[in-house]
Length: 431
Image (cartoon, rainbow, N blue to C red; front, side, top):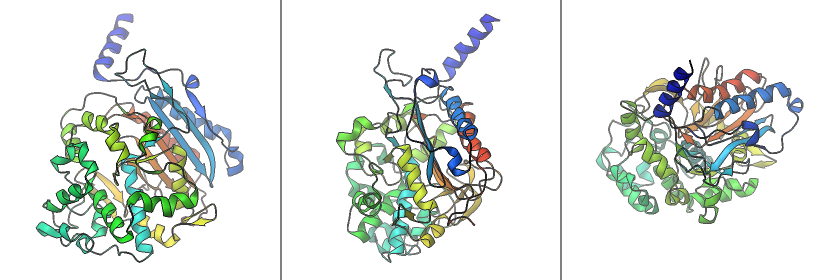
């Protein structure tokens, strides 16, 4: 019997790359949380959600994770587990480990897309652009090779027909040359006619939208974000990249789980332009972390990511400060694609103009989450709001895993939230 267990453990070690898991109660931190009874819940609910996080941590797939949940605008969970540095699978056993805290900074990765989208919607709200304008109205060079009919709406809904990332993007140094990035995208030929096919644009769409925002506002994307959203609301780090001085605060990502094999490896390479392990390495490169990647490098605590979703959940006003009109948010989260197969991801996804939407039966946000809107990030970051439950959620993780049985545990966090918190929302987005 013992030999069978040893062989089983040996096989798992060959198949999956896992972190050294300490007892969850020894590596857990928490920030200020309200009594859940203040928002119509009980402690059994919050503890069930946290136990789902602990079970996910025990899979060994995540060196660090952090969760922040707001209910009716109040923080009911703001906790972290694990280590942001020193406990990756390939770190030496004697590496210095830095514990994750609720103040640790994480990368939202593709969840950054919805933030960039909201900046576009803010420009539309102010009459600086229109969502059905062709991209070439603002970026004339982009219209080459038959791309003159691509509109902002096409880009926001992943229907622009240019999902493939140019090979040159494999050079992370390119991020320091934004004019060259735009020239590469302008020289691309579309795979399909604008609007005809749904195919997730992992990076290309973000650079286009970011350039348009900069063109119509006369400010850099970081400055526009800071001036119009962050400063009025008193945010700290929630922006594209970080200053070099704050690099030590950013959690290090690690490849975990089993090797990425075909056909999944090919699908991911098409989406990312490099293989999966290389993408994880690039995610820790200082050039990536200090540049502006509109579709992939908002750096934030779990709390601030949840707070941004609370801003949207509350109809564009937070702490008495209005940033978005409620009508702007309703337009941004309105369904544009109903479970059409996404040709990049190979799965049916409901999209709005910038968000991944929940589902009537099941979704990434759990069962019966039809009103939920948000976005996932590479690979297991979940940032979303659910008006039906009046919640704003941010789950940050540093383990980057393409496929593993342990992922079921990760999804159980969202399912536990959906199951335990009743659908009794009454906010401005409740319909």
